Amino acid sequence: MFVLAWALFNAVAYHVPLYLFGIDHLDVASLGAGVTLLTLFILVVALTALFTGVIASIVPRLVKPLCMAMAVANAIALYFVVTYGVVLDETMMGNTFNTDPAEVAGLFHPWMLVYVFCLGIVPCWVLLQIKVTHTPFLKRLAMPIAVSVFTLCWAYGASQSWLWIDKHAKHLGGMVLPWSYVVNGGRYLAGNAAPYERRLLPAAHFVSNEKKVVFLVIGESARARNFSLYGYGRQTNPALSKAGATVFKKARSCATYTTASLECILAHQEPGARAMWEPLTSYLQRHGVEVTWRTNNAGEPAMDVRHFERLGDVKADCTEEACDHDEGLLRGIEARIAASNQQRILVVFHLEGSHGPAYNVRYPSRFNVFTPVCASVQLHQCSIDELINAYDNTIVYTDFVVGQAIDMLKRLQGYSTSLIYVSDHGESLGEFNLYLHGTPLSIAPDVQKDIPLILWDSSAAHSNANATSIVEGEFSHANVFHSVMGAFGMRSDIFEPELNLFSPENHQ
Ligand SMILES: [Zn+2]
Image (cartoon, rainbow, N blue to C red):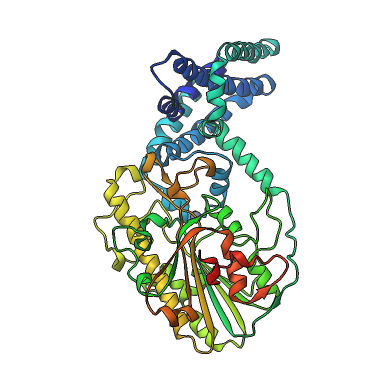
């Protein structure tokens, strides 16, 4: 009885978003919709009752602590599902494991305590008050069996619901607590724990002997729609619009979350189920290019490069506000290159960019261009205008940082120089009631996939001065690897010249 009561409570207390999703996506007036919703409810109850029931049959003493742990974890998970509209699928759990403590602090909000208290602590207290009477083993076994039989009968009777449930399985599965985070977290870890070796790419040679510096700037959650260079009504690109850049109008990310996008950006071909090739940076370093990776972010794959530096390392004793933000990544690079005797240099800047939900803390205060801004991590508590103001300020700041990088390249003596700016993925700002990113790619809205892809090249800069060139046609993360190879005049069997953005013949 205790187990059944717990299963019912779990299904009622933590699954409101699941039913709301059902109500949103079903023709509610019809009888079938009611049956489907009821099926969902029964499935959730059965799943919990079965799991807890089996545990109860084997180790009765474990049941209470298990339920209490579930209550607290569910409360936290529910907070994220409700607040950010996230779906706790395998990739989202992967993101969770890759989140660093500073990001967690950024997500923290007093409302979370309310969830934990009401749906975590209070149920725990109630659980403690309940006296569970231990029944004989055979009797304990009866409940799970009865639940299974009932569920199977129901499922058979409600067969018309299956099509709908199957269609939305991925989405629904991500909202069923605690299974979403337990199962998908386990899946992610299992997939990740399996060690895989990165195979080396084929030997390469250089067809050019010019001294070359390439900057690759990887943005975070920057969506093309909010760039004035991509037609946005606000001036969010004051620097880049004067830099003489080339703008690739239609560019798509290959994923909607950072780690997967970084794999693509650094891969010579679409990564398979397990990325197995060495990343661009290791490939170049192995062929004598001096590679520096500077990050104010996380999620990069393991790589073998000359310098791997975090903002904290670069910042040293600098106490200025700017040193805590993306522009701090540029510190000392100019001097390092000037002092270097290397012929070929690649510097990657992995920006924090527009990392949500606390957009307002991603830029120094002098970039508070659009006001008032949303200062809460509870995005739906801000007006949509405040949210977009804060987000747009992050774009203006990114524009400034990329502009500074271009200015630095312009100042470099004796090198031919190129820069690529690309975002890892886009961002949802409340469209379809979605926030942030990480929606499964197959159902993700365009705003999470349409990314800015911008090039600057010292040789082109002479010919078109400060005017922006716009390139139509479709581009993606797949272009980055081959463009960097192309910029260095590097050739090998895997080089695909038609993906090199630096050759004008590819600008249809
Ligand atoms: Zn990202």
